View 1: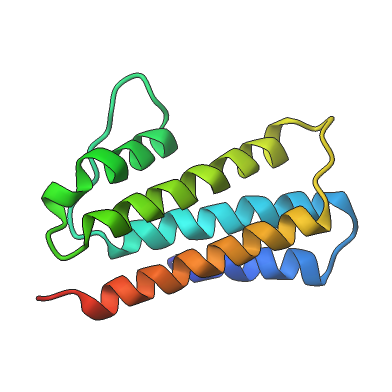
View 2: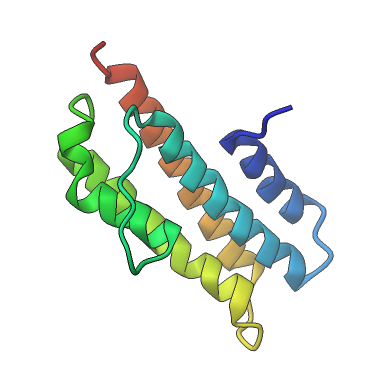
Length: 133
C-alpha cells in the first residue's frame, strides 16, 4: 500500500497526541515537514529539476523558487514562492529536530510546525481547486 502526504501528517498529529516527551515533539516536527514536502510534490505536474551540489530537499526548494513557474503554468509564481519559503522554514526546523540533539525541541515548536504544515496543505488544496486543465 502506498504512503501519501496525509499519512505523514497523521503521524505528526499522533506523535503529539501520544507524547512521551521531547522525542515526540521531534517526531512531530520531522513528520510535519515530510507531510508538507510530499504534499507539494503531489500537486506538481512536472518532474522537479535536480541541482548538482545540493541535497534533494534543497534542490526541490530551489526549483520551486527559480524554475517551477516555467513548468507549472497552472500555479501562480507567487504561490510557488510561498510554498518554497514555507518548506525552507520547515526544513530548517526538521534539521534541528533530527540533528541538533543538544537543542531542546518543545511541544510549542512541534505545534508551530504542525500548524505550518496544515497551512501549506490548505494552500495546496486551493491551488489544486483553481488549476485549469
